[in-house]
Each structure stands twice: as C-alpha cells, then as structure tokens.
Length: 142
Image (tube, rainbow, N blue to C red):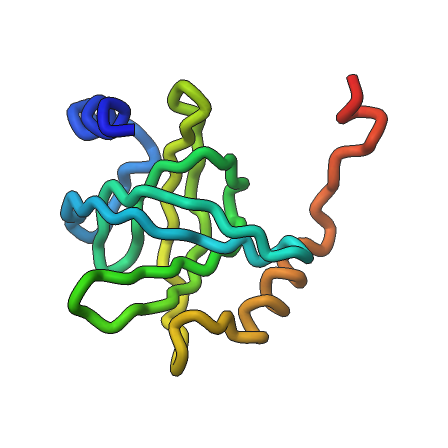
C-alpha cells in the first residue's frame, strides 16, 4: 500500500477532472473504515486516507465504490474525539494490485455517538438506490 500511496502522491494532477477542488487538501495518512450505507448488511471496508480537506477526503482501499454511493466515514484521530461523517463518493478508479483510489465529499456530521449510524442516513441511502439497476444473475455469471 505504501508504494501505491507514494506513486499516487507524486502523480501530476493538472487536467484530471476529479481534481477540481475548491478547498486545499492536506496529505493525511489514517487507517480507518467506511460503511457502505445502501447495502442491507452495512459492510465495512478498511481504508487508508490520502488527503483531507474541510469538504472531502481522498482514500485508497480494496473495495470498488460507485459514484454517488453514500458512505459513513469513521474518522478517529489519536487524542481527539472521533467523528462519523456522511460522505458521497465523487469518484473511484482502479489503481493496481486490487487497490482502488476514491474520493468522497462530506455531506453531514453525525451528532452524538460516533459509532452509531443515524437512521436518516440509512434511509437517504436506500432512497438514493431507487431506480439504480442491479446486475442480473445471468450477466454476472458470464
């Protein structure tokens, strides 16, 4: 993972559409987790953050996300109060060796306990899935 992070950090970002950022980002490395909210089982995925701003987060992981997926970001920094943030995936692309690079825009910060996902977030994620085509079993088998 470290070598992939190093390569990504040193890539030129001029002309890449995902890099139309309105806020300056800081390189921050944290091992943490995100929860995919639209799934009935609320799967968690381990991530390594790449960068962070007041509006969003860049990360790498071994899971592919779809643009507009809603995720709960479990952000914990040693010596600080943990935060649970609602994020919307802005992009996700395959890098190599099973690793994906993704970015998420912050939508909301949870009030109260940082490990309890608000019901309103899960309902919002379910509503966002209405009309999204799921792959058929036949298509997945081919």
